[in-house]
Image (cartoon, rainbow, N blue to C red; front, side):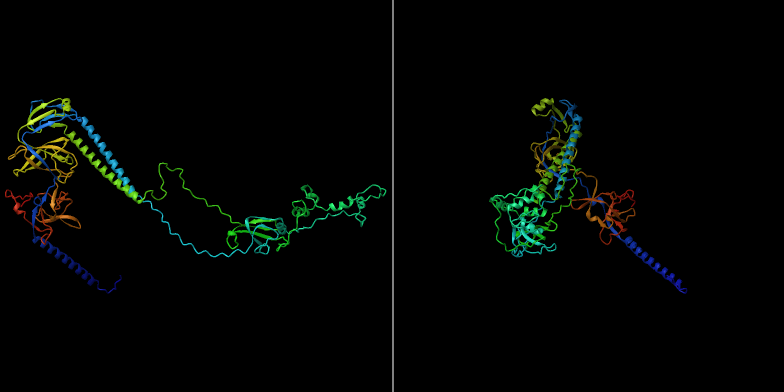
Amino acid sequence: MNLPANFPLKKVMITVVSVVIVIALIITGVTVAVNGKAANATVDVEQVSNISTQYWGDQSSTYGNATSDFVQELYPDKEKAISKIFVKEGDTVKIGDTLLQYDTTKLQLKVESKELEEKKKKYELEQAEKELTKLQNTAPYVEPVIPEPEPEPTPTPVPESQAELYTEITEHSKPFKGAGTEEDPYVFLCTEDAVLTKGFLLKLLGVTDPRATPTPTPTPSQTPTPSAEPTAQPSEVPTAAPQPTVTPEPTAKPTTAPTEAPTPAPIEPTEAPTVSGMAWFKQMTFTKTNETGGESVPTPEPDFTLPDGPFVARFEVHEQDNENLPLVKGWQMDGDKISAGFFNEVISEPDDIQMPDLSNADPGISYDTGGSMYTAEELQQMIADKKQQIQDLKLNVKQAAHDLEKAKLDLENATIKSTVNGVVKSLTDLDTAMSTSSPFLVVSGGDGFYITASLNESLLGKVHVGDTVMASSWENGQMYEAEIVQISDFPNDNSNYYYDGSSNPNSSTYQFTARIADADGLKNGMGLDITLKAASDNASNAIYLFKAYIRSDDGGKYVLKVGDDNRVHKTYIKTGKTIYNQYLEIKSDTLTEEDYVAFPYGTSAIDGAKANGTEENTDENGGIDARGLDA
């Protein structure tokens, strides 16, 4: 933009600078006000350990009995081979002492076999899921919609035929139209097998029909004789010298000879050269004998006769033998050209049809020609069957995974240790123990109380030897803590395990034994309710913070965490699953149980507010608070 030379540029610069200064002052004022508010605000804080919990997995309940005389029994196992026994009968053992060692080679092979079995089951499941997807994407066969028949149109009345239909066309056949010219030929209505007679052909060609009896042409003589006496015949044959005149005797033969001479005889082909072409054609065309060999009997004079030709005739065959209906076929003949022109419709050959080239096609692949061979009901049933198969395969996969886990536990527990403080009561050979279905090694202990109960197979691998269980007595109402010292390798035939809703009641159960250290008030055979804590797959020291102390904005979830300056600051965190509908897993390392956080709602919950509540956690010795910070 060009400004005038006398424009006051100095005033513009002063105005711009003034606006910038005002904006800066406003921003500064707002910042100071906010910081002043935050500096003067005080917010109560809580230590994370007080508002959080830990998750160690699901709990499961079972039932057992207390016993004061616990016996550890080891039965022979066909799938395990003992490599070494470390005790003998009568030895005194304590909990944790090694009793025997199984051969790990066979156990390792078992683990590998179970791994292959699990992979096989997973592969079968994957294939079934692919087949299900294919079925779900298959379009069902749809019956073609048959359109309703359209009402037949009212037929247009066809005029009745006025032409005469001919199966034989003669010189007396009357055309129904035409003038006989090339532009307007005679048109005859005829059948497909109609024939043309000689008389019609002669008319067509313009040849006269001499129906009268033909007379032979006499040979002219030099001296005409008025009489028809036979004396005239010698003059026809030349002689070398005149002979004496002889008066012939009158006989009947000379008078009859002239009468028989004119009678025409059938012309043989060999006689054709002696007659002119047109005369021969007439003789061939019109000579007709009756059944007795004489001349044809003359027929009555017809009502119509075609004019002498040549002319052009057209012969037509129509639908239903009606000249008013479409033409089926026909032909035309021209008497001048002696030729026939056929004009029936010619069906053209179809265009070349392009066929797919399957010369290089894989014979093992079926090519879809469009549409499915299954109806919607069949597909629905196939999908339902496939879903059921997938459910069964999923159970098989879980069972294979369980068998693999058990095989791994057998490998890990290849070394058998004593679970009681006692004495080796008996030690027999494996064959004898197997034949009598009795234990080959028995350790009897008499100190303290033990709990004998069962756990579901789904808890194998989640509950371990050394885990703690809680037991409560029905009789005295007391709670007891016990440590698991043994979990059986064999499922129970029947057990006291009852279903509490967290396990499958149809699955197998395994007996376990737990030792009670403080057994005051217990009696032998007393019934106990037992609570097992099954560690989850991802159980750890993760913090599960009370959800009310977590807030979110566009940046994500955050907490107001107390910093080194004893003020709360917005700290973003990563979260995981929710437990008990109240606690949210903190997956990031930005928060520990020793940290302090503020309730993130209310007028005092401002980033930078002073923390209130850390002083009461201050350690009087050294002036260090619970977070390890200087007070």
